[in-house]
Length: 261
Length: 263
Image (tube, rainbow over all chains, first blue to last red):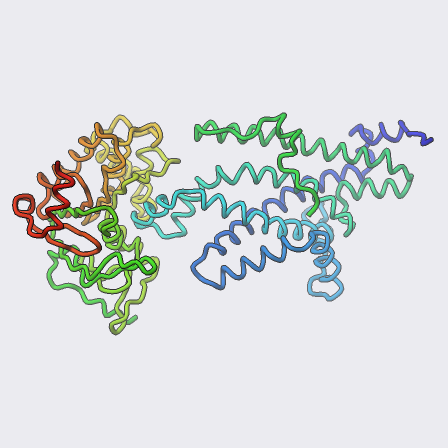
């Protein structure tokens, strides 16, 4: 019969005591910051890939197709390992530590963020494209008839409208992103799960520690769900149309949960 | 840059189409269309649905591409330049510059739903013409007065009726001070009680502007057109002044069409 170690469990689920361990405190900070940066990178790359896919020029269409094909067709964990270990050993890029004032950003965090962002871009491309295509082509025609170029019409007329379609699935992607950062454990990037792994290597309490780890992720995704619901309620008010799934539905039907990539 | 873009000598010709052909796949929608529209002329194009009249209108500002022939607007070939007899598509920037001089009003209004009435109107003047915002706004408000919607300045399109939306769309096109206005079935999507208010604005405009109007509104054609062009199966069947057109249609197809539409 396994003896559940309540002392360890409570120490690691209660933030003030857990954060005394820098592995956990820093891990949580890294997870949140990497999620935000990688998601932002994914949105930017996704926008370019979506526009590339819709381009008149075949070369842009091919580049986008190949990008999306490769990064959706291979596991993120492999992409990340290739980028960090593969690029390192060949000296294609060594990912030297970057110092921003007092903060040092390790090569593993850089490579992990980059891999997460590039991978995410391939998924965002489809979301952005669907958003753009949901806008009546008459909008682009009207903009062009007023003398706007394609770029200006996209920026001023189409994308602001498409954003309302893009934001709900983007929120789900971000929810996923926070969980997926845990894959950075394979390159020892020092995020939250890595922190728990290190603690476990020291005291070997995998049951207690990994339940605690899961609860931190649950906390992050739940807080985000609340924020997302408010953002979408705001969108719904402004455009005066249908609302997204409610809070309870969002939490318990797993809207947005897609598992490991 | 070599630009053998022959400028038409007669500056009174606003639109000139020569042997314009257009295909959608294997469907031949415009067949050797020839037409000239002079300054301040109001031309109403009528014809059965699917006859190609809207397609022709959309070729005039190069929203649709033509397969052969030439269309000149304000004396310049639109959308293309002629490289020893072959049409080569112009740069996006040149096309945009030409389109800025051509106003277009759409059947489904195509107002920008995320912008208010006044924002719809000043968007292109401020972004394309770089008119200072205050000046664009003042001009935009004058245009709203002109179409009778001064009080709707800050409303979003979904807060306006169809007729009001179309009047804002007309003001939006006029804000670019175009030399030519194209109307693509501007009243077809409107409830009957709203058609009058849009036609009234168009009739007033017809006093002072060059206009090409694709429409089924025979009352408007009679009252405002200088010339009626009847199009069927991608060809111009006949064109005449409204008086002559309605009194003495020459071809059987015109007579058939008029009998269907006028009873």
